[in-house]
Length: 115
Length: 223
Image (cartoon, rainbow over all chains, first blue to last red):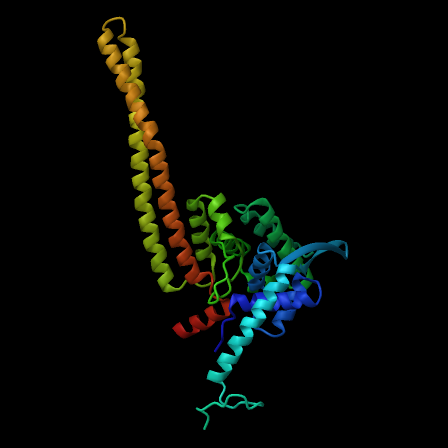
């Protein structure tokens, strides 16, 4: 069983990583792979799309006699990240309410379907 | 860099030729850097990305499909990128449709539905191409006819002025008619290409956008 990661969430995870610090391509891929089952080839379209939409910009830095392309978040990238976080927050609560029977902590609204 | 990886990249780059220069260079650089930074062996690269030709075709197809739109239910492409607005604006739709189909065939998964769709699509396009060639043949014939009429008209001018004027007038009228029809024909060809592009995009959505991991599961399920 494998839940497909919607592109908007992949965009969000990349923006969130780059929001912490500027990163180069493989570092981003590796960090995402630490958490999600994503193949290397999945990342290129994500990076390109984020650049095309102006959420990320790039600059080159010398590294071992070659260049590494670093990604930096833009102002509109930060705004977009905030939107994705908000949307995900709502979605997560909704799915948790429907899907998770055992509620870990907090009372809040009780789940009537609970046995 | 390992010479085999170098060769992989060179082949990859060759097949990226349909992309605009900037896009091509950016794609190449991304993969070159990824290979260097990840330290993948040539075997790992083949396992993850497949043949360089197929990798490039998927990138091209995704470029032609223009995936900047971010529908919430969108899932990730196996590879590539592209802004749809740009792809349709600058490229001609025939070309874009062709790139997408190449990508579909290059993708690791070709689900049966997509295979049938591609087949139907190919038949329709073949029919249309025949139609376009016949139309082009008719028009070229008409151009020859009008030129012949004008030449003949000039030729008989000394013998029969009426005949000459009639031939020249007819020839010029026919040429004028062709000139009027040409933009309409071009428009129709373009329109059909656009339709083909939409169909190709649709087929591409069914195949290219599916994640490789999922594809593996599908194949297992089919067996």
